[in-house]
Amino acid sequence: MKSTRTAIFRRLEALYARMGQGYEAAARGTGFTCSGCADNCCTSYFQHHTYAEWLYFFKGLEALPAPRREEYMDRARACVRQTQEALLRGERPAVMCPVNDDGLCGMYAHRLMICRLHGVPHVLAGRDGVPQAYPGCHRFPAPAEAGAAPAPLDRTPLYRDLARIEMDLLGARLRALPRVNLTLAEMMVQGSPRLTP
Ligand code: SF4
Image 1 (cartoon, rainbow, N blue to C red):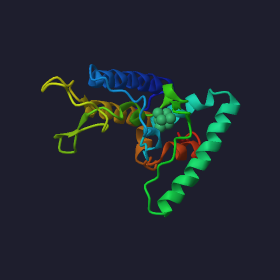
Image 2: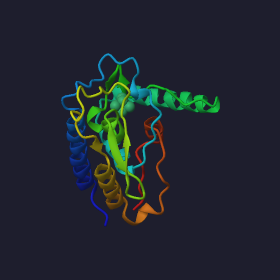
Image 3: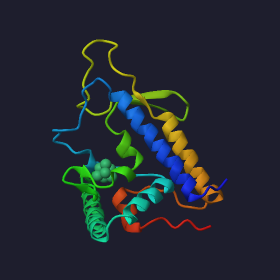
Image 4: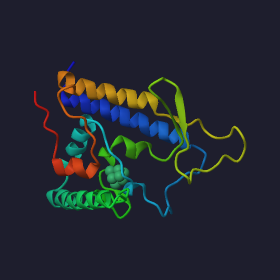
C-alpha cells in the first residue's frame, strides 16, 4: 500500500508523540536531565535508516527562513567533511550536528527518532523476539531503592511502527531503493530524497 505524504507525516508525528511519552515515563521520578552535561549526544555518530524521517526532516528544514537554512547547510557540508576525515584517520567521528545551536536543537520538532530516544534505559527485541536490555546514558541515576526505577522504555513497538510507516510510504519501491544508512549531515547534503513513483 502506498500512502500520501500528508498521511505519512501525520502518522510519523503521532509516533514521535508516543516516543516522547515513552521517554518521559522511563525518566519519571529519576531526576534525569541533560543539563550541565559536559558530553553532548549531538556529537554522536548516528546513522539513520528511513526515507520517511528523512522527508519529514526536510519538510521542517524547507520551512525555515532561507538564511538559517543556508547556515545549517554550510554546517552540514563541513560536518560531512570532518566526519570523513575522522573515518580516514580510523577514528569514530565526534562532530557536532549541523543543526545544533549552542547546545539547543534547531530542528526540535523535526528531529529524528534516535534523537528522541537516546539516554533512557530501554529494551529492544532482537530478531529472535527476545528482548535485550540496554542501560541508557551513564548519567542515568541509579534508583534510591530496589524496585523504585521506572520501567525501561520498550523501543520494540516504536521501531516496528516506524518500519510500517516506511513500508507504507515506499510500497513497491521498498525493494528498488537503496537502504538509507546516512548521518543527518549526509542526508542534508544529499537533499530531500527523490522517491520515484
Ligand atoms: S537533530 Fe537536534 S537533537 Fe538530533 S543530533 Fe541534531 S541537534 Fe541534536
